[in-house]
Length: 216
Ligand code: DC
Image (tube, rainbow, N blue to C red):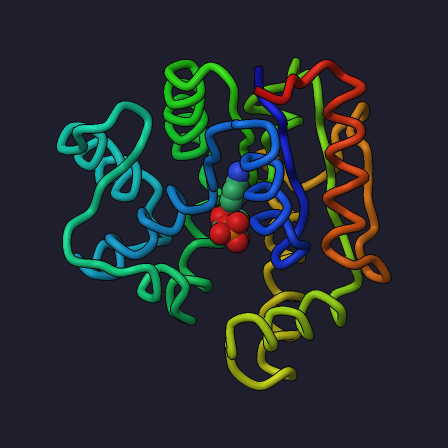
């Protein structure tokens, strides 16, 4: 049983997924972390992020050396490393490779298969990774609202810089040929621009209940 949550950068996916995970006792996976780990490790090892076969080989090596099914592990990094400006740019390059996306899709499915009940956030969870998920959300908001929130939450730099990065990533995520960011036909689209987090979580939780996601 998978709740799929997709949407552009900084639309509020992580905050709301964590709230749903708490309410419904679901395991939570941020699928973007896998793409970020790959981008981070490619930069650290000077593997070209424009070379698909080199990045796929790196991915296979990390799958081999990781001990947890479905999750890549990389030594020597902390959460901040994965959110650096360099990784933000490199991740858009690696995430467009179809062969790499196939590997990551498989990893996410393996992870979810081992969890049973989970909420997974990303860009293609409801469209490609779990097209049969019983509950799908697509969260969105204006680029300006998303950038403003990120500046407040993460002190992530100047508003102008963050807005530029949000718009650049929207363009990269929406225009790539492999699994572009689009709402699934059966996703519930929530524009969070003028909503408080609690309102968004309430909307999502009530749909989850209606679709039979039980509260343990
Ligand atoms: O959710 P995030 O911002 O941490 O994701 C980082 C990048 O990974 C994002 O810019 C696009 C890519 N991504 C993807 O292509 N597909 C996913 N399911 C999740 C993330």
